[in-house]
Structures are given as C-alpha cells and as structure tokens.
Length: 146
Image 1 (cartoon, rainbow, N blue to C red):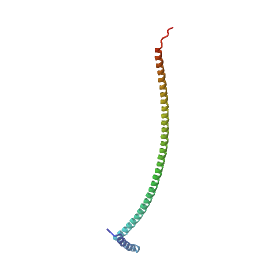
Image 2 (cartoon, one colour):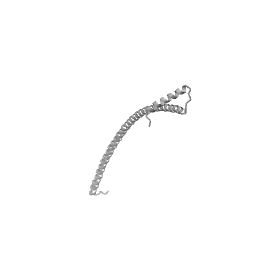
Image 3 (tube, rainbow, N blue to C red):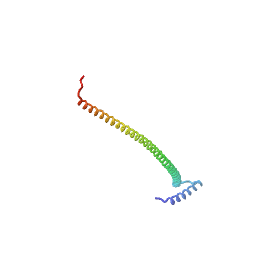
Image 4 (tube, rainbow, N blue to C red):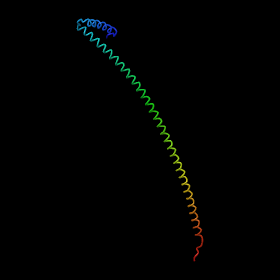
C-alpha cells in the first residue's frame, strides 16, 4: 500500500518537527501526539523485525547443526548396523559350516552302519545257506541207529 521509503521519510520529517515543538515547550496537538506515537510504533516494529530476523537466523543455524548431527548419527548407526550384520553373517556362516560338517559325519556314520549291516546280512545268508546245504546232505545220508 505504501512505499516504505516515502512513508519513512515523511514520518521522520514530521516527527522531527514535533520533537522541535516539544523541545521548545510548545503545546502539542493531538495530531502531533499521534505522529510521535506512530513514530514510536514504527521504531518498535523495526526493532522487533530485526530481533525476529536474528532469531530466525539463529534457528536456521541451529537446524543446520541439528541436521549435521542427525546425518552424522545416521551414518554412525548405518556403520554400526552394517558391522553387526557382517558379524551376524560371519557367525551364521560358521554355524552352517559346523552343521554341514556334522551332517557329513552323520552321513559317513550311516554309510559305515549300512556297510556293517550289509556285511552281517551276507554272513547270515551264507550261514543259512550252509545250514540248508547241510540239512539237505543230512537228509540224503542213511540214518544210523544205535
């Protein structure tokens, strides 16, 4: 609505005139008092604006620091997480290797048991075969009576 420079110049000139009246102890009109009040308010707004801008700049710096710390913390957490995952992977690899060795040992033991059973089975078949052969031979022999 107003151009700031034009309004500020006009208000400065008017307030200087009113202050001149005030210093020379002249009576101030309501308009003069309103000009001084308006000048005081614009000065107050100007200082508030400066304070707010400083606060916003400080907040922006604090946010930037917080962002930096957050990113650092995230990177550290990522590194720790990756290290933990790597350690877990190593541990699980070791456990899988141990389990694989146990299965290999069990397979070998089962193979030995199978071979032993197979060997014993053939021995039993051989023994049964001998018994059958001897019983056939015994049938063909004449019985001796005493």
